[in-house]
Amino acid sequence: FYHKTLDVELMGLADDAATIVVTYESLYETYEKAHKYGEAALYAQRAAEQMKKQSNPDRTALKKHLTQAAKLFHQANKYAEAIEAYTEKLTFQLATTDQNDPS
Image 1: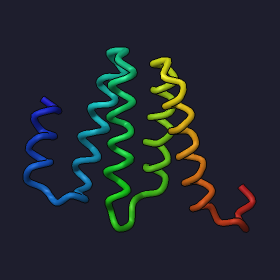
Image 2: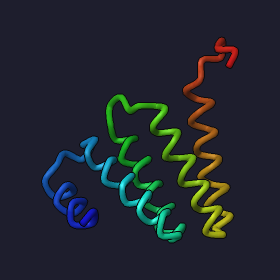
Image 3: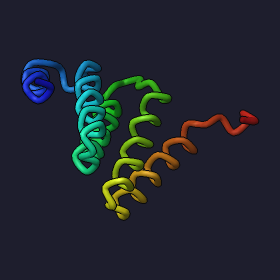
C-alpha cells in the first residue's frame, strides 16, 4: 500500500511535497516493526533527503529522520552507513543550533 502511494506521489506531486515525507516515514516505521532494519534505514534516509528539498523544513523532524536512519543502519549491522548517518545528523545539528543556546 505505501509503495503504491509513494509511486503516485512521486509522479504527481511537486518534488518538495511534504506528504512524500509522511509516506517515507510510514514505510520506515513499517519495515522497522518487521525487523527489516536495512530497508527501514533507507526509507528513513529518504525521508530526511525529501525534507531537505523543502524551503523551510522542520528542523526537529529532520533531525529525527537522520537519527532514525543512523539507528536503523546500526541495527542492520551496517556500521559504515550508521557512522555516516550519525555524522550527517551531528553536522546538521551543529549548523542549525544557536551558539548562544545553553541547552
